[in-house]
Length: 101
Image (cartoon, rainbow, N blue to C red; front, top):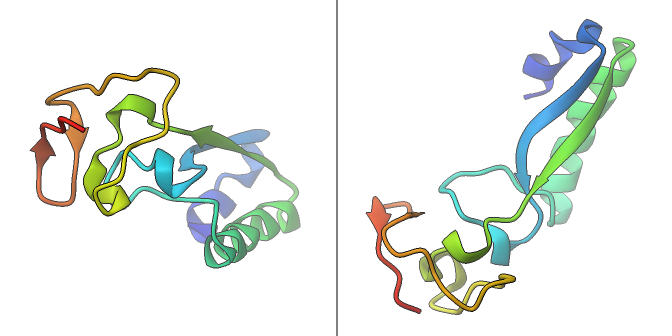
């Protein structure tokens, strides 16, 4: 990712791809996150590379709300502004799933 974004440093302001802000907001398998120390360190490498090449970058923060599947949360409920789920729209590591939580 550092190489990818570093190659685009001369574009002006880079807005990253969507970055999940918490495990409770993770709504897509293998999505990038920014809540653990390891993830923060990884993104620091990206931002440092972009800055060293004279670019600017901001994180597009993402929270999937009612589309978060309970499988990402060890069966727990997603945190959302809505008390409902989005049946049939949740992506999981196995496939698109219906979550009735």
